[in-house]
Length: 335
Image 1 (cartoon, rainbow, N blue to C red):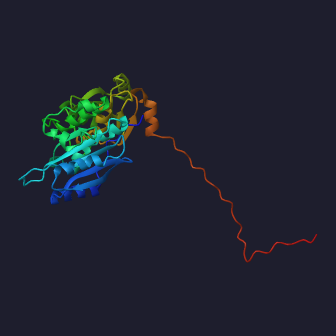
Image 2 (tube, helix red, strand yellow; image 1 turned 45 degrees about the vertical axis):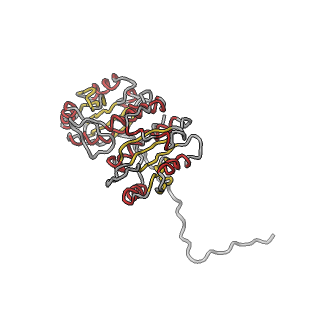
Image 3 (cartoon, rainbow, N blue to C red; image 1 turned 60 degrees about the vertical axis):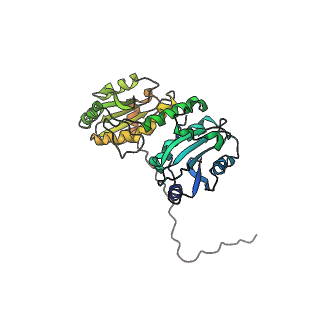
């Protein structure tokens, strides 16, 4: 089952458009869509004297049923000398496919982060054109609005991710520079990774629980490691840092039966796990991904570490005789 991608990049052209809109303050909104797994600018509206007309212009761009889009909206604020009154409005029609809903919902954080979180004062979800009108919208993002009534179960789980990653505690150790989601790391996990970095074999299993990266299991050797991996809950994703001789491996197991929220959180945390391990002195040499815990076996790991060498068959080309001079014309025999 293909997982929803969360690694979209905001194109430079869109960043430049947004930067220019902030500087000149002549743009009311910028429309953004996701097409062919890429974030794309799909239009913009210059400001007029009527903010209401400008706002209602967004719904007019939604031509098709089951449409989805983001709008970067510049809220008018009289007498403001700063340019921070931007909100993100995400429109997801009720008839959209679950996958499309998930893709858009999981991209909110990406937009805010790559465009500059500090430029936005809020965000709001809409699902009908009637909601996307100046009269009905009422800029409810300024209040504590519960938008869960508009969402499917999958969307609520994704919304939890956004809330989790937006309000992470920083009282414990965190690692930056690795990309992805940077959850705090408990001290025990750091200590065990440092120990493993100096061992010739062993394993540290990591889990994400209560917004923190914690130790799920430990092993002193390979045999014990595989036993511990099989004993982990079959529906729970895990990161296994396994040392075998000179190889320091990262095994990422993401069961298909795990919750959508878990799959997305773990997937977005992979780079951070690598950075955390590196900080502890554990420099990962190879990474492998599995769909189930029981698939992680000594035999499979060895095949991946030491794939059989396929000997290339030498193709012997026929040696052409070096014929000097011009070719003689074929003899014609009279009948």
